[in-house]
Length: 117
Length: 311
Image (cartoon, rainbow over the protein chains, first blue to last red):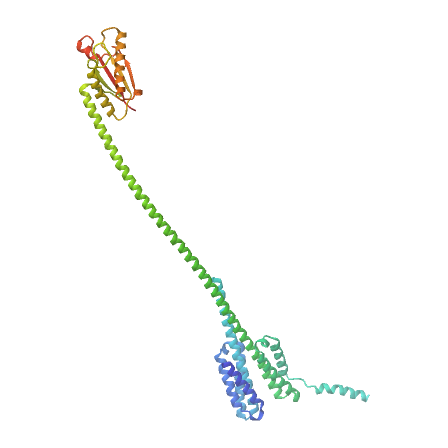
């Protein structure tokens, strides 16, 4: 559910971005920051590969904020969009890693059960 | 020369006019290609499609304005979307693995449960068998108890009859002893190691020189028969006739034999076993007293019934 929601917001952000003039980088930035939090919750800091994407996202968020302060809305929007998708990749990567670990544990349990028979 | 130069320039021109795509676009193309040829194409096709669309945007931007921010930006996003598709694909794969593990776990559990059930059924059957065997054994025990009771009864009966027999024997022995006691009144009885000798005086049995039994002798001999019959077992009997030393030897031997035979015949007549009785005449050869006095000679005239001890 959460995943779908994130995807929709990201898609929405990309759509609005493509509209050019009517962009509001703050909205996209909010999405990006939400994605960062979601990635952290998913354990992105414990996964080296995901952490890389997370770092890229936070760096770009900082950059985007700077651009907003400078009044460069277009660059700010681009940076926010990139941050949002980077954070999402970080989140899904950590989720996948955790699910793989769970799957491994489940398979081990099956092995044990089969051996016990 | 000039024409050649213009040719060369013309040839160079399209090379210059064809701009190089940015590194971001090159990377994005590779990423999309990877996603399309990998498991993402199967497990997250919609996401791959989204990435491809973004790549198209980048390609368009590259055509419209090569090297522009738009090209780079769209390429960046396209690449990330491709990576996102791959991440989703591996998430799906991991979940699928979990589902598979779960279902095979449940299958195994089912199998284990079935095995347990079978084991339970087997145990239950074992128990039932045991119970029925126990029941049968109990039945056998009952039969055995009955048998034992019968045996005890038989044993008691046997003991009773043995006791009765013992008493009967005792009574018979007493009777025999009593008969023997009575006999002592009319005859001399001598118990020896191997035999019992009943001595009957000759003058009581016969008239002088004869071998026919006197009537009174018959009565006395009947008492002897009673006593003998009262004995437990019929014993071998030797009947010996004796005389005193007066008269000829051969005559005495003959008379003593006839007299012994007369006694034997009477005993047989009274029901004693003929096969067990022998009669012999001893004449004057075995005196028990002196033949010089009348009393001694009277003692020597006698019939002895020798009862052999049974072995």
